[in-house]
Structure formats: C-alpha cells, structure tokens
Image 1 (cartoon, rainbow, N blue to C red):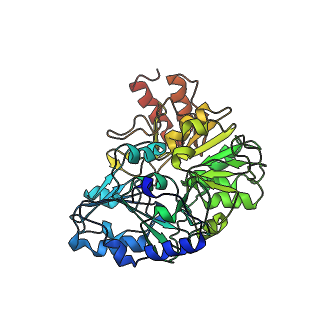
Image 2 (cartoon, rainbow, N blue to C red):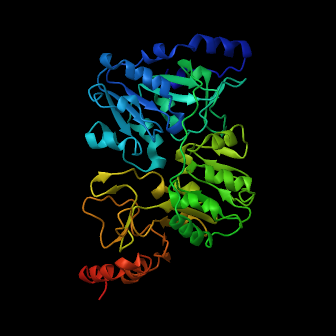
Image 3 (cartoon, rainbow, N blue to C red):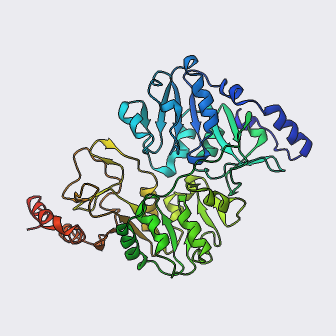
Length: 443
C-alpha cells in the first residue's frame, strides 16, 4: 500500500470494524504475499512477528533470495537455520549471539551505520517490499501500537509496498510516536503468543564495583542513558541514594523499572520532556512489558529522534554509560569486533558519545572489565589488526574499570597512556608500559 494513497484516517467504529474484518487473514495466507527476491523488513526484538516468519519459512521450497532485515532477534529464527541459504538471506541490523553463526557462515549480512540514520536508509535508497511487525490490539480510533519496538518501524512501513501486522494481546500499548492506523495496513493476522523475553547479562561483583564508582559521578537530577551490557545495567543496584533522575535512552530495560519503583527516577528535573522517559525500544522481561503498557510516563520515539546527537545535546546534565570490549592506549574503543570477527554493531554508542559531548554538563563513560574470560587484558597497546574502532579516541570521555575511572578528554597522548595503564589489571601494567615505550607514546 502506497502511504500517500491511504486517505483520511477514519475513526468511525463500524467502519473500523469492517476494515479489520476485511484485512484479517490466516498466517498462512499472509505468508503467501512474500515473493522470491523480496526485501522483507521486520520490527526488532520482541516486536518480531515470529509466527508469521515461521510461516514464511515453511514456503522455503517456493522462495529464492528473500532478504529478511531484522535487528536483535530474541529467539533463533527458522529462516537462519542450516540449509536455508538459497531461500533466505538474513540482514542483521545489529549482530547478536543469535545471528553471529549466520554471519560467520556467510548466510547473514551486516548493516552498517549510525543508528539514528537507519530510518533514512528507507527513504533514500533501501526498497521495502513487505514490512511486518507485532503490534498491540487496535484502539477505538483505529490505531495499533508498535509497543516495545518503535525505532525505524514507521519509516519502513511508509516505504513498504505491503504492510502486514501481527496483532498480539500481550504487546503493550505504548505512548509516543509509534502508532499506525488500520487504513495504512494491508493485512492483519492474530497471534497471542507470549512475547519473547531477554534477561540482562550476568552481573558480576566486578560489574557492580565499576557501577558503584560511576555512581559517584551521577548527581541528583541528572538524566541517564544506559547501554544494555552488564556494567551499565548494574547501575540499577548503585543509584538508590540518588533523587529525581531522568531517562533519555535508546533501549529501555528492567533496570529502569527498578529505579522507577524505588522512586529514584521521576524525570521531573529534565529540561527536555520533563516527566517523561524517552526511548525507542525495550528489551527485557514481562515485568518490563507490563510496566510499559499504557504508561504515560514512557514516550516511545523513532530512533531518528532518540539517537539524534542534536536532540541528545538538549538534555542538560546527561550521563551516558556504555560498554566496550577493548580499549587501546590512545583511548580508541571497540564494542563490535575483535579482529575481523564481528561480534555486534555500532548501535547507538556514537550517537550518544557525540550528543552527550555537546550537552551542558554531559558525561560519557565507556566501561569494561580489566580482563576478559581468558584473563587477558582488555586494555591493549593497540587494537588487534582488523578491529573496527567504534568510538574514536577524540570522542572518548571517561573510561572505567574495576580499578578506577579516568578522564581522557583534555589529556596528551602520554597522559592518556599513563591514565589508562593506571586502571588496567595490575598483572599487565608493566607490559603495557613497555609497549607504550616501543610505540613512542612514552619514554
């Protein structure tokens, strides 16, 4: 359906019921609208209509070269299984543990870009033959809510030739900008399966220790933007003595629910959107989804808004906390690959690093454990050959490990090196110092 051909948005009750009945089909019938060579774009995370995708996969012998664009699937899709290569190609908009095997095998491709720019990909160049999403039930005005997954959904729906919605009673109806009218939809299916859930990374004592150090930099009334890795999420255990905190973030998680329930997050001191949690998607448990349902405190916005550095910069006193896998002695951080092996993606880290840098009293933290699971240092002389830099040395502000926090902005190369070595694991400090001399960073 061409978006501009939808006409006026009716709110007549009988007309809405007629439209719903006319567009309601079985899952199998909806899947039959996919053709070989199609670009199919799915909503992300718990917004993925898994039953519909399974039905599309069942047609594998009829289909060739269908590209399925998806971001952060929470359950292993059947279209990624071995033997599907000729029929389906997955395009990962953020690589995860579920999509990594497909990337390694060459079955999945990886989309590159800054997250806030993703909606523009559709308007500028990327064709969308079919857009699919899981949504909440239709309201009395004829609108469905994209619920926990707004990000680039509207941009994809507006570009799509066909829009198919999977209506699920378990999808929370959320406030904000993530709504689509039934007149803008081609086909509807119904599926009341429980939404897929995701728990946070296993939190260790080290993560909590780092979070406790970061908490000392957070003041009453600050606005938070938290990444989804273990250390940022550990802040939920370290901020209970704070007051009047706000949230402007990319992904909402259960950690925020804990702080709202404790009275720590009120959003009352926010300069931009006071009283509101601003986010673009949510990943977590049923407790989180229930918290979001018809909650006027939460406003879901497109990622082109939440992650726009200039919008982020309007939040005074904003503190963003993200995770890195490696940091070199110049301060370059990677949160994506180790060498040429792609682990995840850029996501919104750069968006927030640059937005926070422009904000009044903004603070941006890159966090990591001093060593990895193999007891190797995560602070290294240089990033391994082939490793992509996620956050440049010029964009990195604070770096935190369990051995302390250092501020890199305003420091010379030598001062940066010495600062980073001071928060490395003690077993590696001498080796890092010697490597710095060989590289000419110090004498």
